Image (cartoon, rainbow, N blue to C red; front, side, top):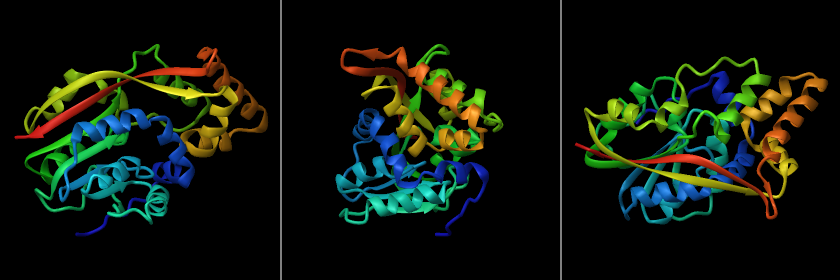
Length: 267
C-alpha cells in the first residue's frame, strides 16, 4: 500500500488546529455516533474513515472491534488522530491521503464511513468512484452530510466565514451531498442507497464560548481570523457572536442543524 501525502493550502488550513479540532467533533458527536450505528461495524471487518479529522468516528468503529483506517488530506489532523488514539485497543491506523485517490487495492474494505468529511472533496465524482473501487461487493457505507436550507444555521455559518475571507469558494458545494436527488445520480451505478433526515443539536453556554471553541479548533475560522487586520478581527467576532445570539434559550444556546444520514450498499 502506497501512502499519498497531500500538502496544499486547504490541507494546511484544516490541520492547523490539531487536537483542538476534537472539540468541534464533540459538538457533532450525536450524528457521528448515529452514522457509526448506521454502518454497524463488526469485529474483524475492515473499515475506512474518509476525512477522519481527529478520528472521532474511527475511534467509535474501532471500539466495536473493527480494523479501522482513517484518512485525511491534513497531516495536522492525522497527527492529532494518532495522538488521541495512542492508548486505544484495537487502535485505528491513520494516514494522509485524498478521497479522490485512495491508496488501497480494489475490494479492500467491508465498510466506509465519512462524517462531514468527503463532502468537502474537490471532485465528488472521483471520490464516489474511489469508494466503489475499494469496497467489496455487498460492502456498505454510511455518511453524515449537511442538509440545511439556505436560511439554516450551517448555511449562515459558512456564509459568514466567506464574508470575511479571501479564500476561494470550493470547486464543488459540500451541500450537494445533502440532496437526495444528487446522491442518487452520483451513486446509482454502484450502490443502492437510502437516507434519513435528522436534526443534530448543538448545545453551548453562550456565543462567546462558541467563538473561543471555533477560534481554537476550527481551521476555517482560525485562518480567517489570522488573516484579518485587528479592526476586522473585532468585526468578525461580533458578527460570529451575533449569528449565535439568536439561538439563546433559558438553558443556553440550542442550535438545530439539519443533517442527512446516508447508507449505501455496493452492488
